[in-house]
Length: 151
Image (cartoon, rainbow, N blue to C red; front, side, top):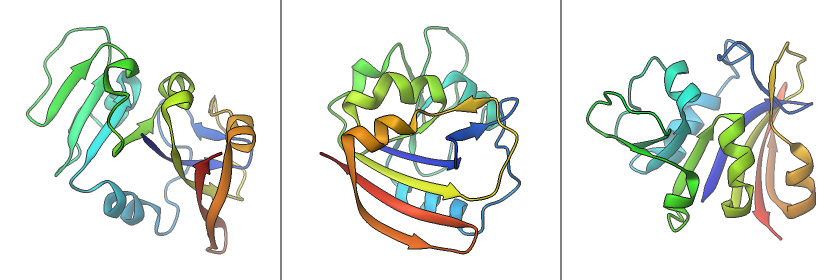
């Protein structure tokens, strides 16, 4: 699986179940280009944070043990273990799902902003430093795009 995530320098990815920033220039078009036509995997809180609307032109997998109504293009699964063979699936958040999936992730696409934001949800950047190597990076003023591969 692949992880695509944006964070600030301390690993902050969210605040009150929303992104802590209004916009990181170019990040959403990059996200769309990379995930378009594929499978995106998200936790229930991430699903709720995108207003319970499936991302278009993608199969949306929502990891939840709960039941509920989910529109077309969405499936629910009880745990990340159900999809470990999906090499081209993209984990898109949130922090709990990412934490449970580190062992399955073989590639990380990270947007890292240098701006400080108030965050209450974080990813463990130590996992990235210990188990992955950077294979590509490009600077864009207030943020970098970085690609990592598992060691």
